[in-house]
Amino acid sequence: MALININGCEINANKSLNMDEACLSIVNKINESISLYSIVDECNVCDGLLWKHLTPNSNTSLVVSTRYPLHMYYTKQNQQLCHTTFKFQEYGHYGWNFSDTEICSNIYQLVGPINSYLPLLAAFMIFTIASIVIVTTKFMIKIFKRFVSRSSIDETNDTSPLQESDPPLQPPMRITRVSTRIKSIDTFRGISILLMIFVNNGGGKYVFFNHAPWNGLTFADLVLPWFAWIMGVTIVLSLRSHIRLSISRSRIILMSFKRTLIFILLGLIINGLSDKCHDGINLSELRYPGILQLLGITYFICSTIEIISMKAQRNFQYGRFAFLQDILDAWIQWLIILALTATHLLITFLLPVPGCPSGYFGPGGYEFHKKYANCTGGAAGYIDRMIFGNHIYMKSVNNPIVGPVPPHDPEGIMNTLSAVLIVALGVQAGRILFSYYLHVYSKIIRWLSWAIVLGLIAGVLCDWSKEGTIPISKNMMTLSYVLTTSCFSFILFTVLYYLIDHLRVWNGAPFIYAGTNSIFLYMGHYFTMHAFPWAWKIIHPTHASLLAMNIWTTAIWVLIAYGLYKQGTIITV
Image 1 (tube, rainbow, N blue to C red):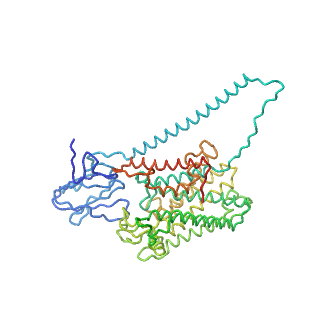
Image 2 (cartoon, rainbow, N blue to C red):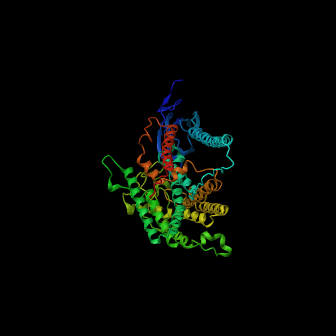
Image 3 (tube, helix red, strand yellow):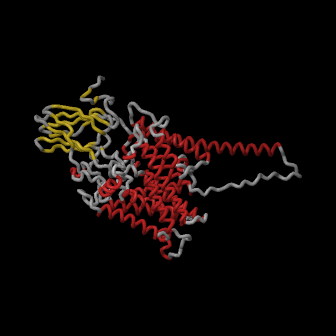
């Protein structure tokens, strides 16, 4: 069948279309000129942008994005007609007719799209089969070794009977050291870092493996809060270990401060890699905030609060409120954390921002009919731009959804202040772990109770909608986002703890390998990003080819982590 090419869209082939694109053929049977407008449906209360002028009785074909639903309409004599929202599918070819009598038809399919999610399904099946094969093989090898061992003992007994005067040889006593390391913590951290490596390298360019445009939640938006949350859990472990070793609290604070400085330095190094040009790093535009900076500062705040306020001995004398002992023991810590959270909310809703409404959480740009075009990030964005100037995240100035906007840093000052609550909730999970150390189901009930309460509060704050009073937004690190991601953290950790540390039906592999050297993997994947053999240039990228490469990249780091794990090498800061 011959190829039919209309304005760059091939009807029965997809070679003229790139990944995440489709073709829309429009037939205009109206006897006058019309103007076609469109806007990505993710844009909240936005006016359409001029897309194409159509002359009377003409047709045209346009390339459309398939990443998000598209809202379209046309104007005739200053009248808006045929408002339609449609989610195009990759490589599909669609038709849309306009006429004086019908106004417009429904969008119909000329050539069917491909299923972009088949590579994901294939990858999942391969991993599942590989896991089954590995587990089965290990089990069979274990059974075989037991059989060989028993056969060897029986043969020895038959061929070499002991003389009556010879006492039986006793095997030497083997003293083994039982590890008290909680494997679910390393596994949780490993899931976070491997997911971070996968999405930072592209995640197959799937929408849900990339950050939400502004409001909403994707897999990529879970990575940072999960890492911060589990860091809070480890704060409790490390502090109790230091106190058992009789290390003074002032020295522990100095150790925490030193670790924070290392985090900040490593974060600046990563920012330098991202901002590097052919002539070197431009220090006048080096980004100061970053993920490691946020983690380092929140770590220092929460660890210092815990060090100063933590009791040397836990008090269990709470009478009828004994079931709240993990909270009541830490009432001072929670008072400080809630004060910091309240400060964040007061600044967000009360700080006057020139030309912007109070409590604005939006991206600016086209949103709300361009009324708040320069209000990106509200008070948080305003504070960062005033303090850091050009030293913030600049790649967000050309937003594909809301157009050109002022720069906004997702790890800025206000977002770091908000993230303190995530780490504090991780600290609370760690307190539960030690307060009810021998009571597995008491821990599980409390962790799940926290998850339910946090989830309900988050739902109320965002009005159970995407554009609520306090929307779920990673870009703004909103309170609803903090509570939602912490809710998922409690749930995931509960499942991992129950399977790994209680039932012991899983050892955490392969995630536990990455979790023991998470910072090394985090730094390493930035230094090797786009470098062979971790990655290579794909001439005609598709979701399948990019997914395969991104999985390969992540797998290499799993192998590196496995080698370090087997050698007993743990690199920490």
